[in-house]
Length: 327
Image 1: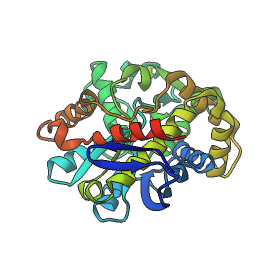
Image 2: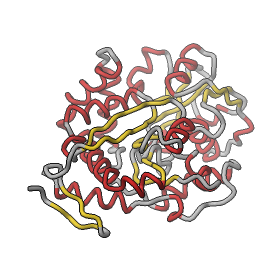
Image 3: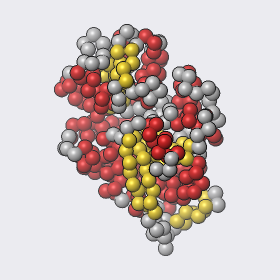
Image 4: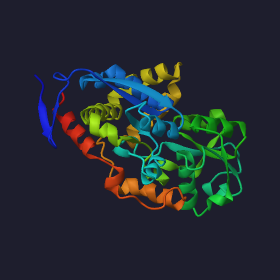
């Protein structure tokens, strides 16, 4: 006997009345994402909404898109989405359905003593991903904010954030973006964060990660998407609360394969202080258009595509109503 709510003609029932249903989730690879998945499993949020969630983690956003369009996965729950928007403009049957990390969780680090400010980056090498990747676009946006044309620096494609950080420590690049989990270990690694280098302060409108899927999955598995977003809303709310430390720490240790308490505590403290997760799921037009306008300025899109053609937030809104009925 489960509670029920009727939304947009779709009857959604609680997990008591729903059978377990499989859903394949593909996400950006990363230790924190892995920790979140471990917390999801430990807390049983998927099962609470009648879902058997299977996670696949990949390093490249283009692999996420190809996996979704090829039917190898049903939904992405957290990944950078600048590449999704040009794909939609070109006719790709994709839709953004919720926010995930709504603020950047990166800072600009350097091991070079003479590089103290973003203004010192002109003429320097910056570790990044491929042109148009999340790391590249964030760095371009930061440089432009401080009056530096991106043509004045040399981007070096060395991979994801951990690869960039290793390059910074080794001195193979002058600076680059890395995650907040090493913020409290700057002295240990011989690095420092640049003045104006904390993206969460400098680029607060740059939504870092979102959830997206295909129009086919929306048509065929909408109920499962609603339940999956409801489970993730509970996950985001739990991890954003003080009682989550031990579970988050266990999850990070399980995924990383080692107990590394300092970065775990640093990241968790950041979550508590900055509240970066989309606890209310809905990603508004202003945030999506901010990324679209950056894409257009970089030549990745020809135009800003109307909000209703790139996003379907009705699924997130139904999920929030479902969370309200769940025990």
